[in-house]
Picture 1 (spheres, one colour):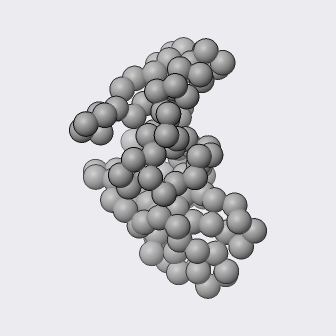
Picture 2: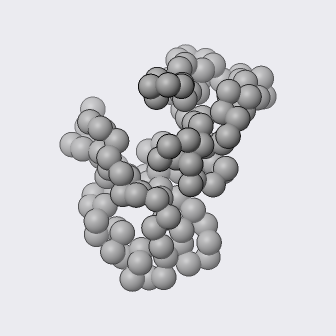
Length: 126
């Protein structure tokens, strides 16, 4: 894996109370397949293209995800999460979740911009 393209969308997921039902909905509507992602006591889901490539996640609104809105959430790759958070706040946005670690993958937070739109900022470990 090469250096991430900062400023690009690196992932997209959906966090909802009925993740299993919604996962099955998107399987039928889009043709995606799914694979379980163990969260300990329950599974979230990676959604896969026909060739098996993961393209999105469908997650339960539990634990650290309980405060996330039920909407498709993009994850934008950033070089320095702390700097991006500072700039977000300086420019009238706010952090609604995090920052949080994603194990060996990196760190992220969810922000709301001054217009009220929500996205995640992700600093990959490289």
